[in-house]
Amino acid sequence: MAINPIYTASRRPEWDIEAMAQGLIAGDRGALSRSITLVESQRSADLSPAAALLERVAQLQKSALGRCFRLGITGNPGAGKSTLIEALGQQWVAQGHRVAVLAIDPSSTASHGSILGDKTRMESLARLPEAYIRPSPSSGTLGGIHAHSHEVLSLFEFEAAGFDRIMIETVGIGQNETSVQTVVDFTLLIALPGAGDEVQGLKRGVMEAADQIWVNKSDGDRITAAQQTKSQLAQVIGLFHREDGWTVPIQSGSAIEATSIALLLEALEKGFQWGIATGRTETRRKDQQTAIFQQQVQRGLWQLIEDDPKLLSHQKEIQEGRITPRKARLEFLRDFMAKYR
Ligand SMILES: Nc1nc2c(ncn2[C@@H]2O[C@H](COP(=O)(O)OP(=O)(O)O)[C@@H](O)[C@H]2O)c(=O)[nH]1
Ligand SMILES: [Mg+2]
Image (cartoon, rainbow, N blue to C red; front, side, top):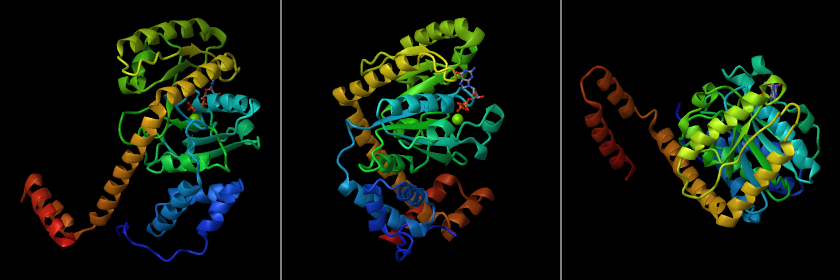
């Protein structure tokens, strides 16, 4: 059965929107978790209450711009993203920040998270009262970014929850509507020491999207290799033209031994301030809002028609070679317009 996107069910008693909003104001973790569950829900009956909650939050919230930093951490599986998030998060908490993380849950994917050492739980960081970690199943998504990730981040930032340093972990793939750029202010790419191979193993789009690069696992006998990788990356990055004039910092260190983390943090804070000062963050967030709207309309329209008998019969005709896709499209849209006029 198709989910009817314009279906408005009577509100289920467990979604008491006002109570959830008040819980968020009070900084109640349970309310935050329930709110995220609602916003991420795929059930058609949850669409209206989710919209009501987000609307209420938007009314109550002062602009988070200039206060909250949304950092995307991208890189191949096993690069050390989760380990670095834990190291960064602990440092930020020590500096007085409140940290929220939307983490990829590798258990539900083919990213071999458990083989590489499942760090999703980020136990040391999760123990801190100033931190909140939300695992996000990456199955069925590209790189772990969901249609609703942007909205989840806005809940993190909601005044009372008050998280001002937000990290989202994603496997770097492609530039499309589900890429990390659609949800964050700034992207940190995690690379690994390795002669040439690693540089080539990263897709061009992923490197172009990086605002900063960290060559991780620069420890033990990999320190020299990490230095070489840094200069190779600098050469590659130097070939890209950035219209915003930003110079991508390239650093190396060890997430596990927590070396050079202070330098990494310093550079990230500069990036945060640069985004605010130049207006890039503001422009980006506005563009992201538009993109979310478009995505949601697309989804909604598709949900409206995916089980339409006409659509299914056209598909059958196409498979049987009785009509070309182009002609079927014209006919289907003509009928569709007539039906919904
Ligand atoms: N030697 C070394 N190992 C690391 C470092 N950072 C992460 N690892 C290890 O690399 C593996 C993958 O780390 P993880 O954080 O789960 O990578 P992710 O898939 O990118 O999130 C784990 O076994 C980590 O302990 C580092 O700086 N040095
Ligand atoms: Mg991870």
